[in-house]
Amino acid sequence: MRRLSVAVAVALCASALSAQKPGASPDQAEKQSAPCRVSGRVVNATEGAPIKSAQVVLEQENAKRKAGVFGATTDQDGRFEIKSVPPGRYRFFAAHAGFISQQYQAKATESGALLSLAPGQEVTDVLFRLVRAAVITGHVTDESGEPMLSVSVSVLRKLTADEKEDWGQRGKKDRLFASATAITDDRGDYRLFGLKPGEYYVKAADTSNPPYYSDQDPLWMVRRALGNSYAPLYYPGVIQLGQAETVKLRAGEEMQADFEMRHIKTVEVSGRVVAADGGPATHTYVQLLTPDEDDWSDELGSSTDSKGEFSIKGVPPGSYVLSAQQHDQEKRYMTRMKLDVGNEKVDSLTISFGRGTTISGRIVLADSRATGVDRMHVSLSSVSEDDDMAGFAWAEVKKDGTFQIADVADGRYSLHVMGMEQGWFVKSARLGGEDVTQRGVQVERGNSGGSLEVVLSSASAQLDGSVTDHDKPVVGAQVRARPDPVTPYNRHRSRSATTDQNGQFAFDDLPPGKYRVLAKLPSAAPEVPPVSSEPQVVTLSEHDHQSVKFVLEASTPE
Image 1 (tube, rainbow, N blue to C red):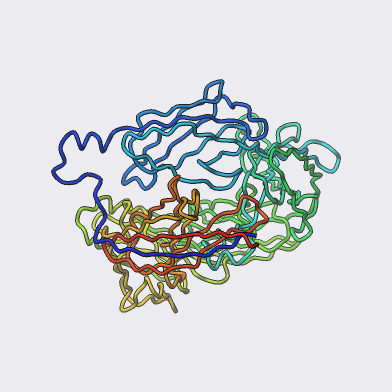
Image 2 (cartoon, helix red, strand yellow):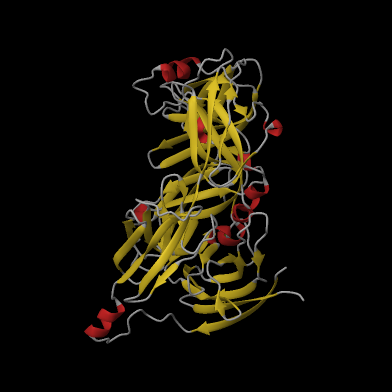
């Protein structure tokens, strides 16, 4: 049994040291930018045999502009060499078909460490031990035993503990996410590959989505026109998810999951969509979503015609969320409604856009050096506890910094600005007299309370440090910085970092504010929980630079 105690020291620095001191000589500048070299081998984790033609990649972390990517391919002995790499911090991994990609210094399939390269440094004898990926294969037939073409088969997984924490309110539900999807061929066969060891649900669904080989198979057009008549099935062949069995995969394991699809009575769901101006909403996509499941491979959907009418055929009985989206010039409209489908046709639905309020605003730059304001988007995400009905609205920012978010339904929303240059952040946002970064955007009875002014700044802060265990660097430790207190309106400011081969980590471009920071040491065994430190509070001001030291002291009881 290992015990963990954590001592944390916080050192304040006036500012970050620049990579090159002012007035440095040409020789000094050349030394500071001297290229690096990385070499090593890639082998099979089971036999230790060399893996030929593996891809080894260095991807620059926190690049100010486009990240630099450097790579090499292994030879017949599994050896690689990457030359002329600029100094810096890199995500470093190896990949090959049939294996799970592995990060630098990782244990099995767990996350690994960053690689830090000092000017002119040479790192040799790097060893990647790739673990073979798991595979699920199977055969899909109809009730008469005939093979079924173009059936979508997916593996679905639950959120990890870290993902639930990141998702906040949405993470409280046991949502399922598709990890991989395959389509059956003309023999009814499918193959899902590249799977990590773990626990999955397997789902098969007839789909009206066009396959990649649609020119050779016009049947998908027939299914789209007439609808499907087969119920989606979960392994080992049940309709209800609550009755499904999970599949536990080990590294390199290949298992078979066959499905015999069942005919059921399906119905048509149809109606019309009314635009914000009262006319027909053309070019609108209407779809039926399955609650608590994010799997787009078997979606049921249809586009509206010139009269704003839509028709979705082949809908199995069940509970759905009906979503309609329209992008009209600079405005985007979106609405959702819950819909229970039984054994009778649903043909009188009316969906209307424009019932919500329009929120106008502008982007203000605290630093005139920023460019590309018109490439930004301002979005509002609902923080409703009913995740299936959570609203979303967004707008493009014009060159003068103004924007209009149309058709925002009543509710409370968190604000996001997308498309900012790295290092920029939302310094402040106010809607009327409300601080949006603290209380969100409240829309009530079609009224938002004023104009939304968003101020962006580049005066971000830096937080770096180290994680050690008995004066030895802890490689591959995860360090998380979360706003304190964390709310649905500032959760997106959370950041994660990984220590490098020296036990060092760095957060560049953190928005100023108060953070709770902790270090976590992942376990190599999935059944063993990671060891976490006690969180420490750090307050960062504009252009600030602070350092945090985590000391992990492990001891074995006598």
